[in-house]
Length: 127
Image 1 (cartoon, rainbow, N blue to C red):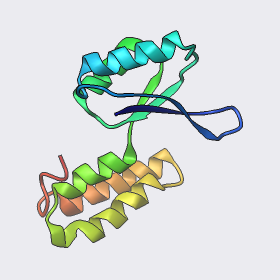
Image 2 (tube, rainbow, N blue to C red):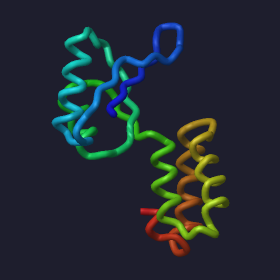
Image 3 (cartoon, rainbow, N blue to C red):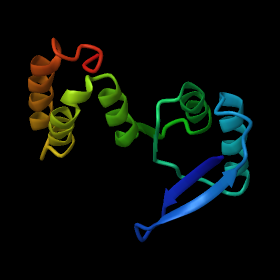
């Protein structure tokens, strides 16, 4: 199931469309995005998604000029899946600290600290 959700001018989320897809391939996503555009989707400024290769390729093809951001939930899951189980709770708290930093400079400083602290204990998670 391929689903697109948007945020309207009042700040509320709306389902823009959904479609059954054979896979999460670039061609399935590309067909879906083409269908949304045929229905009038315009003015896309920001797209947030997981990092699935086919999806990212279709986004680049159909929404040139839009900013793409990796979904924080999927990003966090990927990091935690690569970390030993006993470290996951502590690592999660530190990741949340980075994501909720008050500014970019603080976020980068916290990131450097997290990488230094965890790179030997959980190298795959810190890649």
